[in-house]
Length: 513
Ligand code: FAD
Image 1 (cartoon, rainbow, N blue to C red):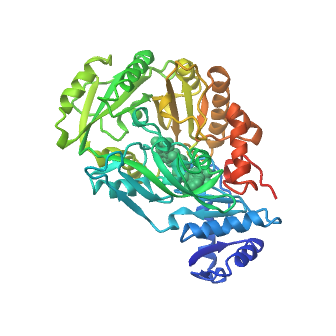
Image 2 (cartoon, rainbow, N blue to C red):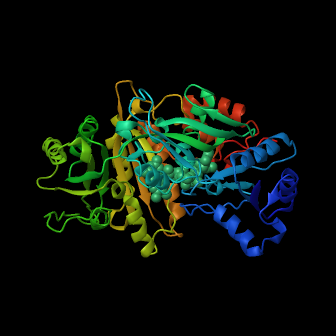
Image 3 (spheres, rainbow, N blue to C red):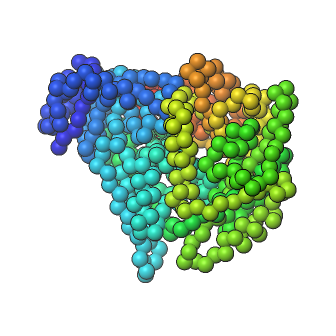
């Protein structure tokens, strides 16, 4: 077996050399030039947020789950070691969640790429189509492979250059979540290396506690080395519709109507139209023929609009009259007169839509900039109050980015996973996700982060909102975030990672040694 090791600190080097005695290094660590070494730890200290830059002492590029198991077994057994370990997927966190200050980062993309598709054939009864995928694989890679057999996962994120293990450690949501649940509700089985170094296969029926702990578990309980993802038949094309509103209540009422029609509608999202940029600068171009020239008011008295996006899948073989479905659905909506348009795109282009925006932003030097993002789950009862709270802090004329708002249905989320949702009365089936996805300059980013913290805390107190992809400044705040779910989360930690080795970048549990 071989794995590459990049190490800057002598103590970790000695520790890993003793660990890896039976291994052959691809290159001896001593042979690495300063550039390689520096580059490996620099990459591992970077993420999409560009807010925190915690540098590890070593970077491990495992060639198999057994490499990860050996490392964690060794660390958990050595009473003198204070070393922490973070799995790093695509590094698309925004607050250093995949970083490990002075610890070891495991680059998950070095696991051999493995995507095996099992397509259900006629007569296989209850058996479902699924894919067995490496935890370090990207969702775009799974999409490409599964489409070759006319299949695709049911539940997505908006952006596909994220890893399977990374999104399953959080939730994984997008416009399909109202219909199929988050990505963590679409997993049949996982292979996990726990913080104790045990390589375990778990599912809803085997090693259930570990399975539930890891889903939405913020990397705290184990490293996902393989996942079995549910697949469905993929449509060929998608009819993608946008409709505009000038009234928030009408906007949310229509969104809620759309998510009550899962038999007709396949995707529902929405966003706040703050300025000309958010009207035109998105992945489906605003058609030139549409007569929509909104008045955005003045700096002192801005006027904002709202846009619903919904989509209907077009399966060539099924003979659905997609145009008719879109017409029937649209007729029931109350958007501003004539302010609706649609395009037909391939299913692949629809799912991969944010890549087009990425390319455009990269071209303008606007991708590799700080991203102080805030994502909140908000109970339906508090969504207007939350929107007002948020808008009080935003100047539409200089806001760079996007504010997403769309409804999710609570009963599509399992109650035993580690995800934290707002508490709500049983009857309150709908909740919202609000994503404040902003770009900032290095000079303004920390002020924006502080502002987001104030909004998150106020929204927690006022309407019981909870952060998604949460960032908390202290273990005590994490307790508050988990609320009544804290005891179960802490119990699971003591069971699967008792020395608190894993995912130090989340800042939930201090290392035990
Ligand atoms: P990383 O940032 O590398 O890791 C995230 C956390 O998971 C860390 O704590 C890490 O230690 C842990 N981890 C990573 N891999 C594993 C593993 N194999 N096993 C166990 N723990 C692991 N999220 C949504 O839900 N919906 C969206 O639509 C969406 N859109 C996004 C768009 C963009 C442009 C970006 C940058 C992010 C978006 N996200 C979205 C957020 C994204 O899902 C999370 O940031 C996710 O963690 C990113 O995956 P990653 O592979 O980059 O994980």
